[in-house]
Image (tube, rainbow, N blue to C red; front, side, top):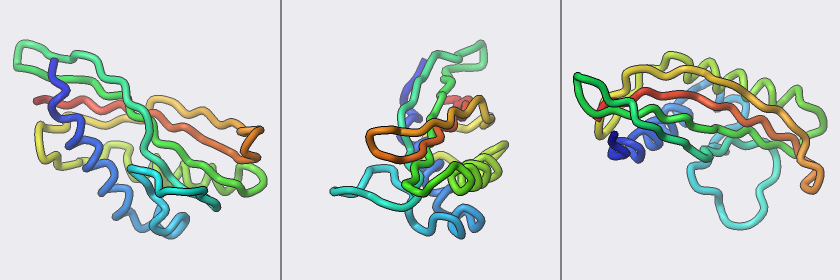
Length: 135
């Protein structure tokens, strides 16, 4: 197994989302790899947790990355957040990302979880994508 391409995968995902016209029309530049200081309002996208497991085989080292990308909004209802989540899914499903290190074999949608965050009076959708990377 190799975790060597994790940073490259994260950077490629972030750049790909920033460059997506449909997503940009919904959230503008509010796509964060690292959250800005202070409170953030409105609707935004955040790259989140990642779980990685070995996916090495006879051809060489590799890893399966399950990456969470979140849509968070303080808007009432889920309609806007779901539109942003759909744009993220459209942008990433089967995307051909070029990594600075390693090679992306494939990228697939795995699951989504939509919920209301009571304490923050916000809506949150966590999208999980699976990336297969060869080192």
